[in-house]
Image (cartoon, rainbow, N blue to C red):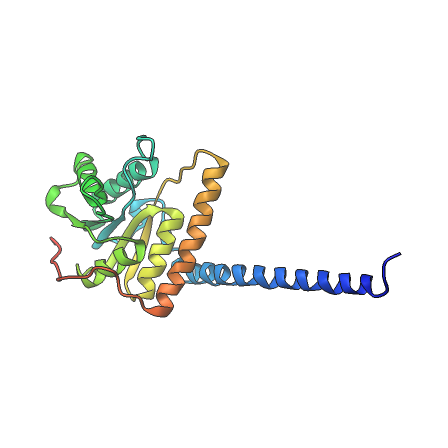
Length: 226
């Protein structure tokens, strides 16, 4: 037989574990829920699958990603993003395109790779502007407004990423829409990883909103080739 009071102690111990687990889960889910609601409120209905659904006389903003995967394979996300941006240009909806991404090393230059790909797809070189300080989505959007003076953006990326970028832009009082490039994930693990990464990025977005974070690099204003 158990000593007197043992079962009562176990119940209290189990109750505390369950309560702690529920509180921990709430601390995780609450920021995610806030971030999802904030994104939906700002970006709902503003991301389109066809360039012709976007507002004309805008500036295109293409968000960067690596041209190649780790094993040297071409990145499908990059390819489809560039094709979508080229189609946007050919639709006549944008006057120029900012390619914004990371330029962390001599042999890693997202804006350069995007510019060369867009030129190969028929976008004129003199209508492509490179932003080499787009370290993250938030920085790319802030710099498009404050460095390049863009007041009306069409942001090109895959759908969930485009929604977050549009939410950032509208929070910063920029008129913005998104153009969805096709999604792609080869395995369930890849899909889950992409989903979790986007949820974390949206929570980070809310933190940037609340702290009014300044991008890591700003610099002098530049003029777009209108």
